[in-house]
Amino acid sequence: MANGLDTPWMDASLSRSTSTGIQISALHKRYGSGDTAVDALKGVDMQVLPGEVVGLIGPSGSGKSTLLKCLGAVIEPTGGTMVLGNEVIYDNGWLIPDLRTLRRDKIGFVFQAPYLIPFLDVTDNVALLPMLAGHSKRDARRRALELLEALDVAHRAKAMPSQLSGGEQQRVSIARALANKPPVILADEPTAPLDSERALGVIRILNEIAAQYETAVIVVTHDEKIIPTFQRIYNIRDGKTHEEKGQAKKNWQRKKI
Image (cartoon, rainbow, N blue to C red; front, side, top):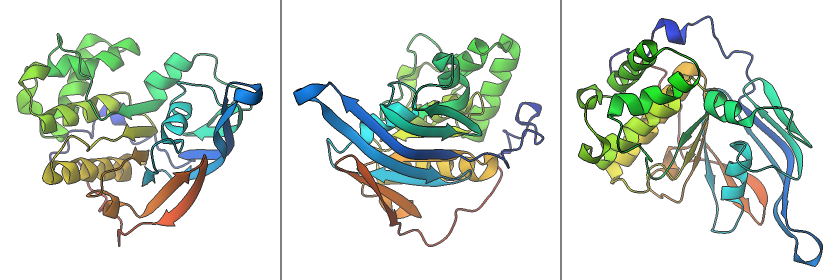
């Protein structure tokens, strides 16, 4: 791919060499209280290093969605510690006063459905987050076009979401997740609606992004065709994580995208 991301916005001086990626220690989440209490997370430990893409698997009801919502600062855990990037965000209570800003600037979300805004064209769908973060419309749109070029969908920059294929929509959603250069990307079943070729293409993109920008990526999946691409997998069962060695034999090559 073209080196469309190598721009002043992505200044190399903003290195993540000091980042811890994602680190979770003794994370608990309890719903309800008393006799009706349900412990969805029971002391989860997890670490994803900068530049690493890790799989998170487990049966329905195992706690995957709860863990992802805690990491994404969507719901509050009951106890434990969470570190994202180089910042402790939770230590038996939120340490961040503005969770909306945290989600906007520090966490990139990629979902099973792209959730593109139907009345905005592709460029503005990607540019919206930088504009909300205070960047000018001109700079935000330039950033969006650079990302779209890097992800091979620049030719669809003026298209509306309804005019895109499923694979194109998912690439645009990845561009949107990268728009504010987050240290962490949380991908929830990002390949479920895609065929094998496009699914593996999405995983390749996530690995190249992680390698180049030292982004820590968690991919929640049931998709058997992408599980062999992970070097490390966390299997969550009954609210606890168990680390497993993946089938991937070597790192994805670090290359400009």
